[in-house]
Image 1 (cartoon, rainbow, N blue to C red):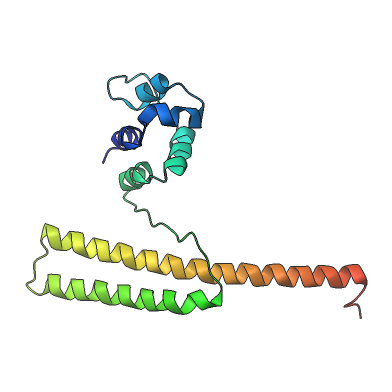
Image 2 (spheres, rainbow, N blue to C red; image 1 turned 30 degrees about the vertical axis):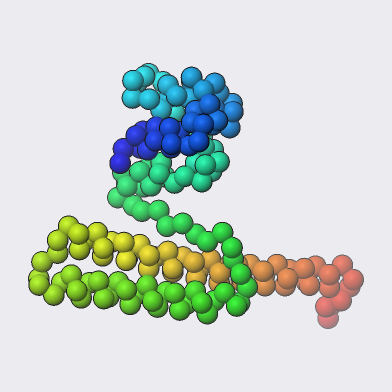
Length: 166
């Protein structure tokens, strides 16, 4: 999908449309509508406004369209990052997603031909595998960061109290 069409749809499909979203970016509803409308080619929708509205609406279609223009894909990361107890279920999910991808590949390649529908299913399974991997990595990164922060705090307390010296 074209990035500007995605922006138009993001604004249009949001409850209240441009009227509801214009205050988010400090504009009038008319100005915002013109910026995303194909009927006003001289009005420009800015990147900062696209980010602000995407965050406000939790709508990723502009980001997805932008990524597609660069032959990339968007992989949302989990909002929650649990402690060590989150590693096992995320590892299990990663294994399931890998299995799903391998199953889809084997099924689709069995006849030596990949249809458009099969390609779509393979790409979807690949995306789900990458999302599961990113979820696991986010959890492990959060554990690392929490441990590093605790270690830094302990070292700071030792230095402040004179402990830890030769």
